[in-house]
Image 1: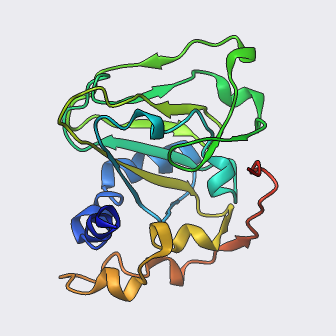
Image 2: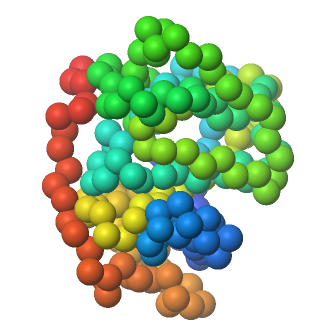
Length: 216
């Protein structure tokens, strides 16, 4: 499909992957973790089209998709000014304290959603500007807002970070959607600085499990 051809071109951008290694972000997470930060290689771009609200990203927790350690954090970036009308991010504050929530199948990215009405919490959302970053824990419930514009695409990206000493699953070091090999992604890059950077690290590998995923 045309969407995946465009998406795979994004996945091959050296600048896209280098953005996840910004020193200001690494310093933030080093301080938060109290140890060196492990940057996940499975960087994700979100391309949200207008007039397609059925597939708006549902309320969910990142942990069920990432696994490894619950102390994985996401940094969400809008790649341009992003209003609520365009489909910005909504967060459910303090939802991480409820642990891993039961899931159900849903439309939208990830295909898994959670119910939140029983938590008694209120959603927080805002208009974001280019350069803003939202950082949240893997158990924090969040969702995308529907893109209600007529002709604008919402672009954003998700980068993931964790303490280097914590366990991690191997899929966190595979290209998103697994349609490309790293050899394909790296072809044409000008530098090898961010290529296979995890291979020399003493990582603790964990197994990924489908136990948290509801079946259709």
